Length: 552
Image 1 (tube, rainbow, N blue to C red):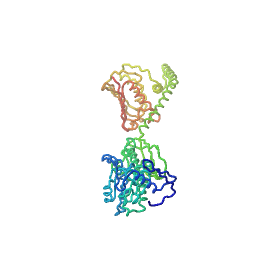
Image 2: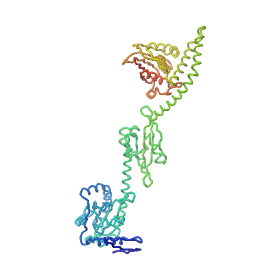
Image 3: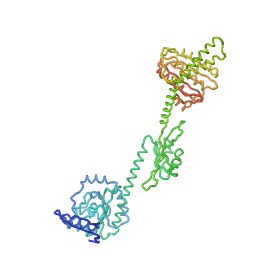
Image 4: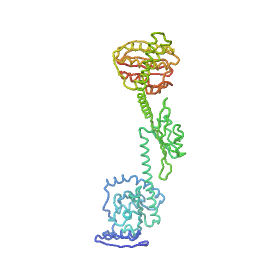
């Protein structure tokens, strides 16, 4: 044997089985491990004059399954092996790959050596075990470290003209063995650096497999993010160059088709709406998480949450930057509804106390005015009474909010109710230089609460009055259709934008400086209680049309 044995206490115990076991007082050198293995081969009765005999091997189907399982590993190893073989052109070297159980999976290298080893039984699918005889693959798997056999180190005489070295490679945790990689060469071509080179290659294979796993996980994360239904995702490299973007992000940022098609490879800082957030993360290392962003979209405000998150690699270097956009417009609307509901509850509670505190003195004032007017004509009596009625209506609105009203349905004619309302409203209309034109096409009998329908008409007339600060025309038309009595109120006032029209009827949503946003809400509530519905159309600068549908 070559080399020397240092710092060794070796004890050979040969039991009936004939297998040699070693008890180590300190670290054994490779030569001792090899010699112990050789003794086991002798005691097992293996004939060194014969070629190695492989008792275990994969079936064709089993080998195919294992090759599929090891496909990526073999691809990685072959990429390194091809580079190595191209650098040693002319040198007869064979590279063999085995799995963690010692089954040969693939050969690469010199065709002459490959043909030779196949002739002596070393083929894809055979398994190297201790029963085969002394070999570097079994040694490597047994002791889980690299081994080299040179010439007569081999047990079988047919292999004495070769040098074989094997190194293990592991999973990313460094604990679980994945397989081995081996060099086999003519002894004349052996080089003292062959085994260190093989060990370096095994380390490189482990790093490449780890890198590929990280890339695969990153690609999976990318795919999950990009394919999500509700997130707009933009992914850039460490410099801010866009490497991926999904359709949701393009839609949220209102990119043109041509712009979206060519966005990959451009700089994210050039995106007006989100570029600054990426700049702060990439250049200034600032956090950007949960930031609310409001963008104008088709004449209305759209609300988004933007997160821009840096992704670092194993060395701590910035690798990717992932930005996500989530549309929270509907959530904002829901929050607004909840806030208005809270206000409404408070207003309802307040209404009860207001009603008790104001209604009684108001009734007294109204009665005293009527009594005083019997004896003498009070100046501005009609105006005073009109304002008292107006205050009474406002108090009535709060009463409707405060508790359900006692509804008394009776058969009534719409025209009669409308005339009573116009008699109350007529003075205010004249004061504001407003002309009221009424057209009764069909006047049906409806089942309703007279006072509540009057409240509806008064609220709508007051809205039209406020929309005509400089005077104008209010048209009222009565008609029927599809089983409904319709009352249409139209004016040529200021009109409303699409956004205002969308929010009309929400509590406390008003564009008037002295309004409370309760008028239309109360109209809708009363009409709904009468099993009817309300339609509103409006155009800025043209006017507004409100149609009430009440079942006949």
